[in-house]
Length: 284
Image (cartoon, rainbow, N blue to C red):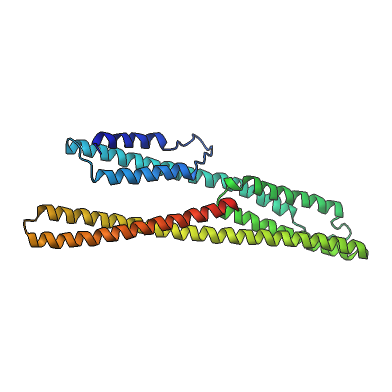
């Protein structure tokens, strides 16, 4: 590869780096977009080890430009994440407000026994709780995981108060009415249990993805160290005048290259695990 080609790759990095919207507007780039940016950064960094520029000064200029662009990409990604968190907080507050308003209080009904919550009022509370559920469902892609979990738990807790109310209500009805209400409660309980299992499954998958990403980061660091060692050994081979040491260095280089290959295989395998986990999250 020529140095001009490497300059073109740096120009490409400028083109594919997502922009950040002004103000507080949330613009969430796709994982694929950022994946291309980081992959290109890794490729460019690797190419710098092999490509020679006409002068050292020109190489330094190109390297500094690349570093600035990579830092800018990291800044933009951080800005996106911060804005998403702020945006998510707004939905969290509104959903929690709705869930809190939707709660039924046995204590209040006991205190105001002359004016307990009526069936129609309870339906209104159910509508509020349904609104909270829909808001969480409609905007879950715009919220961070902790906020979604917090809202889910608040909705489940509010639902529990509703279940208690209807249980007491059913006890005052006739046999057939009680049986019908029981079936409704069973359905709600199953729905809540299903949502809980889904949440636990999602949390488990996300935890595995996070662990694999940590492992990937460590593997990439190890790969860079071994690649740097390989470069140092090659330099020793070029500089030595001793056939004996040239043989020793060559053996070291072979061992290092084997480690590089093994680490590369591990990296590919870990990335496959991450892709599998993310695919599971997409499929739900």
